[in-house]
Length: 450
Ligand code: G3H
Image (cartoon, rainbow, N blue to C red; front, side, top):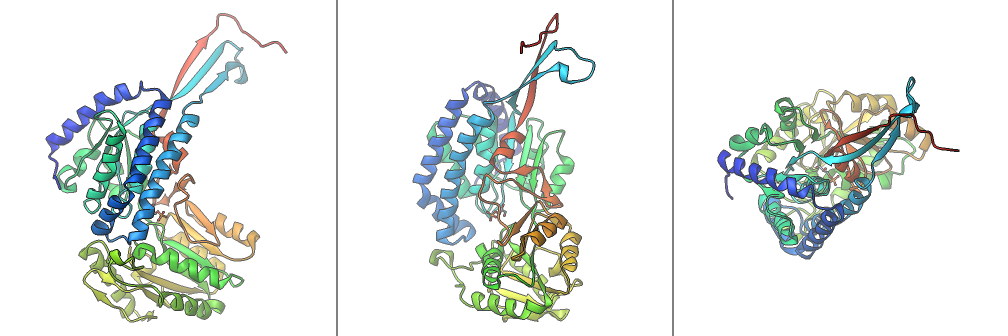
């Protein structure tokens, strides 16, 4: 993998800047056409790109293929949405504001920002790249991608699909390298007009250093799952297993803490454990449910949280087992607020259960977190669910399902340390544009006849 130097970053920025001027003049339908073409090429190359994901980030083969297809769909959807969202502006007249006659017509449209810098995380090097690339390009921006180190090969193949589609040189570029060498240089680069970042708390540091440019940040979560007494426990337990253990828990939207009412806690824990027992553990090539976590330091961090809970008296529902980066799924019951795992996100296949005696206790735990990405509630009482949803300080609350970003056109946002700005196709397109107004001033008021 090439470790780009700062000089090479400068060259990429220069090329992105001059390419953007012409790209912004490319008709919208033509930009959409190219995106559709890239989406088709991406899907045609599903297998080799999925193979890269399997080898680079140990994503199970089936999930890796799903990521590529989902990405192609996202690019196509974004092209469709872009021609509508960007094809419309506003027309305002002045006499709606006190003191004005109808002498001013204001025409607004959405124009590109310039260069968008996209920094996706390791867990979706393809999907969380295109979720930034496609809105940036349809809006007439050029795009510079800094892929994660683990996932860079997959990201480069994905970028190649855009080049094969015929995007002009410089409109979409990829810069690989060490964060320590080019990270700050990129995020503080004067050529960058917008940053879309998904990852950990590095995003907080970036937002402090970045200039006066729009920022879209998604920085993780500690998604709480509140289970009420009337919940369908079969549905809740399968959702918790899927939500907590898919891709070995390495999702910002994973269920990261279960808050269950005391009276049903035993039954829920039993059902979760039965389902956990059926998960397969092993290499991603075999399509196992639980695969090795991304780095040794991640595995060590997870182990630190597990051991802290053990030392403080939590109940382990399974024996803790680890071989190198492979950690067996573990449910930790009777977790208490003084344990680190009650608050920190393991980003691995271990899930804490906190038993609660009131819904308020659950809401309080959820809201006491620094994070506020998503949360979920299981109950058959929709009225109660709405009240609890409104009380939870998270960007999204799922009722009777585990947290998830998709479908990819839904708004996706975090509160507090979980980020700023809202993603989802339409929101991202809007965020990667600015409003331009032209005001026509008439010498005399003009009123339409009616
Ligand atoms: O890891 C962060 C992703 O935005 C989560 O996406 O809910 O589709 O797994 P997902």
